Length: 124
Image (cartoon, rainbow, N blue to C red; front, side, top):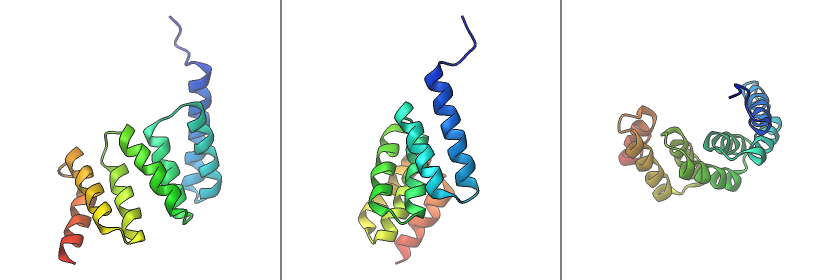
C-alpha cells in the first residue's frame, strides 16, 4: 500500500493551503477563489466555513449564509454555526442567530464565544 495521497487530495490540500495563506494575510477575494477551487475538487465542511467567512468579510452576506449553512450540515464543530450566527446578527435575523448559537452549544456546551454571544442576545 502506498503512503502517497491520491492526486485529487493533493490538489485539494494545495488549493486549501494557498487559500489559507491568502486568508491569513487579509486577501479575502483571493482566498475565496482558492477555497472555491478546493471545494470543486472535494467538498469539506472546513472549506465551506472558510468560503463563508471570506464572503462575510467581503460583505457577501447571502453567499456567506449559504456556504456556512452547508458547512454546518457537514461539520461537527461549534465554530461554523457560531460564524453563521454572527452573519445572521449582522443581517438583523435574531431568531436565526439564536438557533445557530444553540446548535453551536449543542455541539459543545462550553463553547465560550457562543455562550458569550447568546448571553448578549438574552440581555437585549
